[in-house]
Length: 420
Image (tube, rainbow, N blue to C red; front, side, top):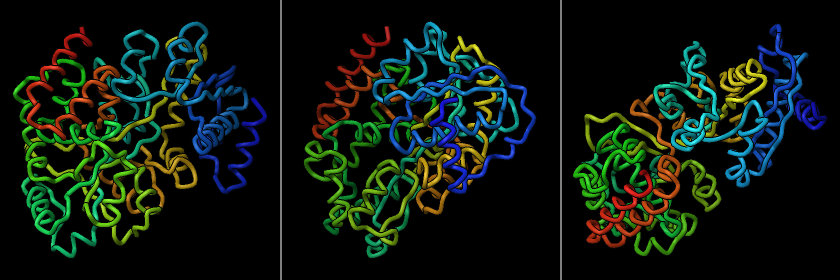
């Protein structure tokens, strides 16, 4: 194996990262395991190199060859890489993002792995790894979305975390009565509007309906879709969102939250670092799960999930399958998602997380209270072209809600063209 991987393994051990107990198990794997990864940023790269080195060390007769590709470049290279002479294992994403490679027969069916006891800990993401009732890969990390809010403002106004849509609207009205916007948001780059639609649609009609819409199986002019937008319009008509949000990126919308002009932000956990860097303390910040709208619908959550897959043309299938077992184990998922590594959430419910209240809340929510399913986010769940057109329409609706009929007709025209 490449010396850089051996060096990384030694560095991890020196840093106090213990080899998992399975490293001592008798290994019958041999030959070469070829892994292509898009974990190219510094912290993920160190994690990937460490895993490859450790797996190599665990199996003396196996040589692990790791190739790391730039994350953006991999998005255009993966199809060719999976063609002739493919690697055994590759990185990718869950749900519809893996669909084209499943449909093309480029990812191997690993349904039988998911029937093993260890994989019960991954139950929250099983739906996101399933196409045609089969599983096509495994998750190794994800992060939660939810409502981050100014706990100090809520306390001052006597508000509590809402559990129902009625409570959400009541809180919002109290904030507005005190000249505080309910939510900050920046929709200049569109995707943040997609997050609001994900939650409003899934809370109104459930995960299965939302994913059917993402697959092009539901018309955008369907009355159920209109109901989702009607719920959204309640907030828009109240004046719940900051003004001129279409002119701000998500980062440019942060000051409204930081200075108390807006009380909450629907956002991914990656924003916590920016909140803290902007001067907010953990005593001022808190987090709640987006409340229920339809009480008969289970919670579904946005939790973008990164994955490993076996190429259908893998030469060392035995080693590839064992690597998937390794990377989904609680011990490995605990280690690679730690604050000194990826700083995200392990998917395995039996893993442990670092000492961070937002990671702790997110892990509890996704492991124990996301029975509806795990969404991958609008621009991952919908095909790229539909996501682009769709998010343009969502942003337009937030600014010009009276345009809804025109927007839905355009999105329906796009659906019929894109999914044909």
